[in-house]
Image (cartoon, rainbow, N blue to C red):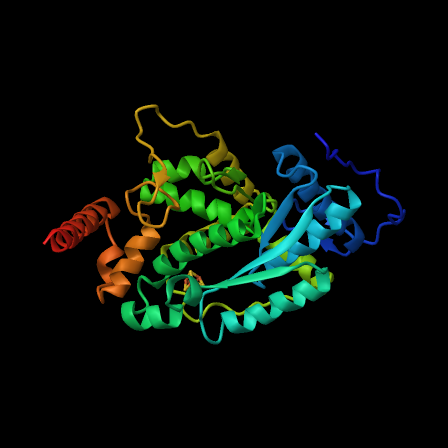
Length: 347
Ligand code: SF4
């Protein structure tokens, strides 16, 4: 491995007399500001090394939203890349969902990050990729299922952006709290296929796809906020105007309650997720490529194409629900259209 582990004692210039300034939310240790920075940065470096996230010479896109997680991720990857000679080229990749009063403002922060961290920035918009903004989608669908559209389109937009930039990997700002919430949600929904994959530090959708990794996988949200605050990083903290009262919100509230009683609950849930072994007879989705757009999909048509089809036909709810049924009916529809066209040509 090209990147070596870094242990306490290696650091030069740490103050010999520690001035205790507070308690680390993750461990309860009493630390001064400098020691907190050291512990925080070292843990992320060790996560990167142990997970084998990067190789020297790679181009890495940082999925940047302007929020605290991606801002801290950009700052820390630049810092660690220099400190430990990772040999990475870092770029920022952003998605503009077209949400007035939210994304337009947060993208200004990303543009500031571009200047602050001297990284190239690529922004892709839903409007240019799909012909729809989230503002227009919410007008059609209302505020109940809007995040389904937004999440599916964002996932694909990031893949498309990564392919355009020809990067080797996309680093996302998912933190320990996000992961623990996802484990809880998948347990509560009984979604075994997702439960198996959701704690992976590197996710790879299959041949030809660009892997994603989570360097902040074991980093607590509270510590990310503390670090950004003390380092005076410039980030955007307003919530999306379409943020719903989603299922994730309940998992988050539950997790926060658990964290108050026992701060290690977050990391314990992640470790439980990592240690689960799934029975062999549990069926997992078989990945192939969408017959329309070519992106990775477990169905004949990917979810983004199904949702887009519904929007374009004026039937926005078409893609909400059991995807196998919807896929079947769309594929049959497409087949009918093809037969119609062929018979028109023959005639
Ligand atoms: Fe998109 Fe929903 Fe997140 Fe807003 S809250 S950015 S609509 S996924």
